[in-house]
Length: 165
Image 1 (cartoon, rainbow, N blue to C red):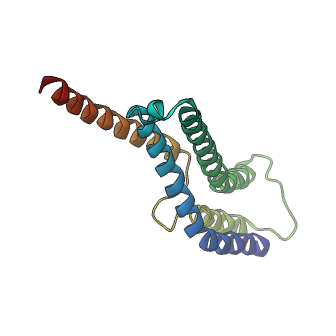
Image 2: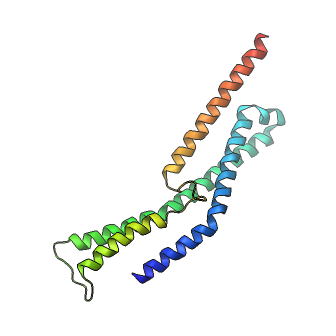
Image 3: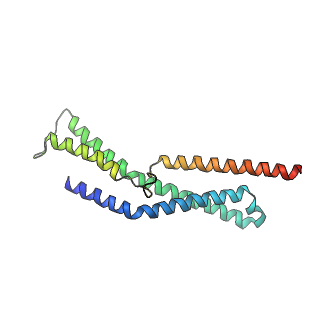
């Protein structure tokens, strides 16, 4: 139990140190994705040549892959704690009641409640603004699609004004 507390303390310390860096990286990557998609939609890359188009695609792919990898790896920590909790619950509820010398049912219940708290504490955040869980990938994808649809609509209205007048 003491070793688990030390590991959680270490993870919390690392999270506190890396949280600003993670926030900056996520901000940079999502801004890079928005910017390069907007360049493609606004036809800027087509007027600058094929190299600009290819570089925009490479940047979008690079930022997207890095973003997904970071979020997936960060989301593994609470999942591991949940798996440990389920294993302890299975041991507690098993019909064969495995007896471990020196371990009482109260200690197992204490460990389960401690694992519940640890699961919340080891969730990696970006400066406390958002938790890095797997659903962040879909939320970010939704924001990007919405943003780009708005750009297309604004560009369509602007294009309609220039052709009408």
